[in-house]
Length: 225
Image (cartoon, rainbow, N blue to C red):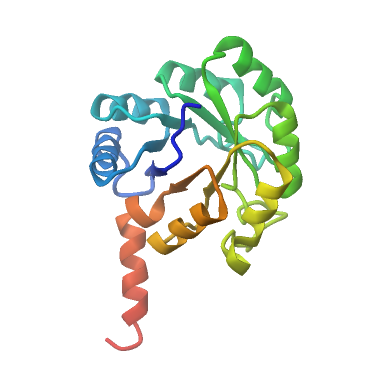
């Protein structure tokens, strides 16, 4: 397996965010590495190439791109896959939900990666237990809870509700390594998901989005200042 049984830090900044820059994300990855992270999740070929200049850690690569008439935007087509293969990332993560896809089916996309880059592992970003089961059948190497709460059918749901009930369901439903991702917002929550038996966990915004972190602090004092 390319990924460690440890903390993976997501280093991403979209165009609308102040830290949007491949150079800045490479330094964010370096900071995560110096803090003890054992893997990185990153968005775009450009960011991954810069990150790999700074740290010798396995990278979960994605490309976020919107397509008309489709909710799928994480590594949605072979175009994004090709970019990630060129980036040198060790793992490609893709939307593995049941949502309508812009071009290839999920099965076709998995087959495309296996034929073109058999050394690269695959992570399924799922939102439901049934999607986790399907992803395992399709041959994904890892199952991630990334999109639970972020699709039309799961909107508003939180992975950590009822002591990570959804995460437990996923782990009981599949035999592939499960990666906890989505709203793992504190060190205590990170510890808990490992106690429950996840293979790895991805933490993003709680570490690498200072604007959002600042907003949380400010919101706590808005009523008293």
